[in-house]
Image (cartoon, rainbow, N blue to C red; front, side):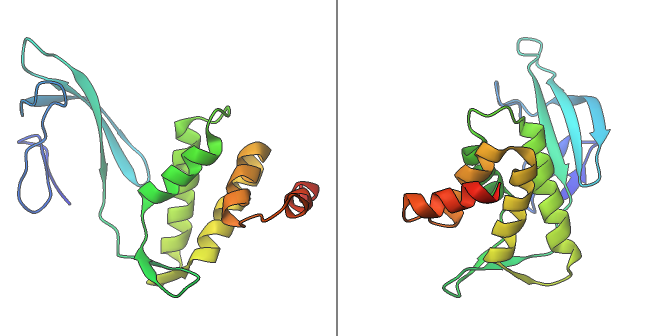
Length: 164
């Protein structure tokens, strides 16, 4: 992914302009910019005088490809979005902010890429997420574990609860 801040574009090879999500005009300006370790957060404002909509964009460096090896041997490209979707389901209606879930995903991603390997077992990803959720919220942990570990009966569920 390349960044052209002069033209206010975020390009993916083809040079598609960044557009306002409300009016679809391509003229925007950066109001505020904050750097994190892995992402640049920019608050933008549409320059159309009738719109003036403010929105947030995130710029993330393209990272090397990482594949997750499933139990059945299939390889699937690592997806941060898939991790966040699972976290959101587990944390639904719990007092856990989007920022906390983003932090869990970022920590996991950092750890996986720091290994320097092109493939990681799905079990490693699942266990790391369960460790993080166990520290964050026990209910979210149990929700995630019940899907991840495929509890078949109430007894296996009780065993997991006893470990908390």
